[in-house]
Amino acid sequence: MAKTTGTKKTKGTFELSFDTAALVKRLLAEIPSRAREVLTLRFGLGTSAVRQTLEEIGSRWDVTRERVRQIEAAGLDAVRAGKAFADAGASFEELRKHVAGLGGIVAEEELLAGLSKDEKARNRIRFLLVVGSAFFRERETDDFYARWHVDKNTAERVHEALSKLYLSLDDEDVVPESELMDRFLDELKEVNDAYRNEEVLKRWLSLSKTISVNPLAEWGRATSSGIRTKGIRDYAYLAIKRHGKPMHFSEVAKAIGTLFNKRAHVATTHNELIKDSRFVLVGRGLYALKEWGYKPGVVRDVIREALAKKPLTKEEVIAAVKKTRYVKDNTILVNLNDRRYFKRSKEGTYQAA
Image 1 (cartoon, helix red, strand yellow):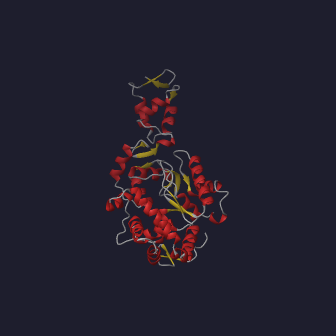
Image 2: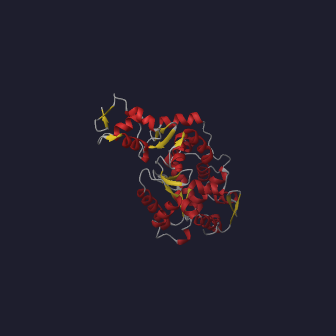
Image 3: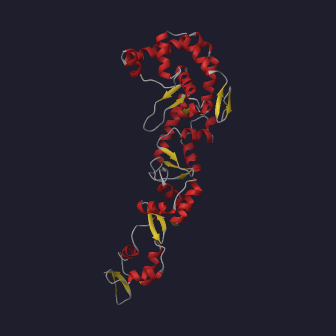
């Protein structure tokens, strides 16, 4: 990824080489007092970091929100026309290069958090982004988080690629990160090669509300049961899915702690597995995923389903049941010989009673 000229990384953030507080003060000093007050309140640039709405400011002065909006717009224009703004070209260019270095388009929350942990400082940076002519903000939508970009062409390509990537995923797809990255790259063929690296790709993926990642670094639609993790049930689902075969509920609880560093009581885990239709009890305390082809029901139900197509011998019934249940032969035979549900023909085959 391109280096961010004029910045240095410190304690998880990038420190700009210029003083944002001093710059904002100079920019505001050249505009009318009423406009200065509106911008200060709107962007949280004063003693309070709280950003006020048009309605709140209008109520303060007993004017309409539209009038406040007009004063705000005029104030921004006045800032851009001032000498301090012209003199600050190097500072705005440094900020532009920083955004470009992050991939040209970046989520607003990530951008601001990466520049400062202080809310007042973030407000000043947000103000500079709004004032600067090189920066463009895209509002939050159902599909994307609010974001800033300095390269319109790249931004359009990224939006388009994310939309196509989402459509390429089925509702319950859960794919490894390497595969997801390959798919994403296939949709980004027209994007500058300088941006085609894992760090930038993940940053672009974070723009999407519809594509997400689970704690095991597997990707899919944000609504997928394999991606969202809201509680013990979801962690249990991921643990069993990763294991690839049925697990005892006590093993599931232990795996949740190991994989996700989440404390899961054995009894609680068992209760959650019982309540969730994604899991099927396939043996004494053993749970499998329904998506693997297992169906809920006791051994008798499995036998009945096996006999639905044609009569089977004792050995064939045992083999059929053991494909979906981890039980002893004798348990199967006890159920099979229950004359209330099954009957044996003279030929030695069984069918439902």
